[in-house]
Image (cartoon, rainbow, N blue to C red; front, top):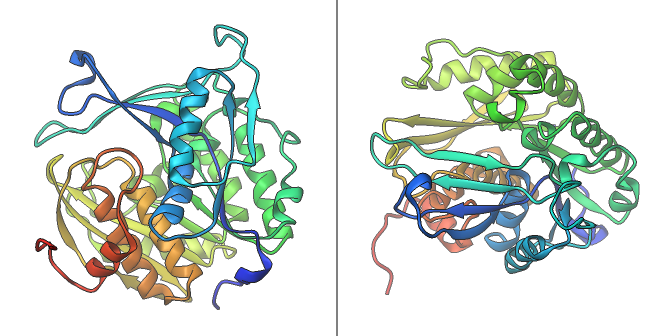
Length: 363
């Protein structure tokens, strides 16, 4: 059965995300440990979805997060304002002068090239958003204003002992108000390392999965977060077989009958610069696969988030499962051709790629 989406006219927002937004410091064509200057971007797994929906697809989106009110926080705000995501539900935490009580997360990321993979080094401990606990945000007040789609993910859930409870609180409130929910598993070993590792990640995500309508992830995410293995895939994720992913998805929806849609990216990283890229979507017992592309990668960070926003756009606008996965894969592909976490693609470019057009010069 199709997703039970609320109408556009009855809702204030098409989509709302809950998650951390960090300052990304990018050394460009140098390494983190040899850089003398950094470009500055904003980024965060859940936020990137809202921003992509707003900037590329023209949808009304907002973010629920927490930021320390100091100069770094206001820099983050300035970057977010450019993205157009509504900030009315940002929780501003007081600054104590040095960040002992709370701070804003920093994410150092280098793009990688050829045989050298991308590297990320997060400095995000004790961030304001990681300290959110149940009851801090009035989610009923948010969803009662009308929200068509709510998105959260495993990055937010892995920030602290309390953030999984906040995620569940938000998901339950969303369902209470007729909002469709999605969750990107987004496994990050560094987030779970000191709070129980992969076993803790599975414990948390297996509980959260009970409240999700649309589950998003890749092979590593489903294995690490939910305990599902994909046959015939080695540790480097080489030799991806879409049929193996389909068998895994069948097991997921059998175990979690509340999940109506599963979106899975298929990435074969032969090098940091060249990736095979596709995606599979499951809905109503049927599978739909996007075109497989060989991508030249400029910056792979945020490709999965852009897949999610394209997929959500397709489902929100009635393009059907085949159209949704095609838009998701195309948007993710385009996002990886530009620097930074967030998409710089336009709807026209996404539609052109979905339609099969090449990369000829436009004049």
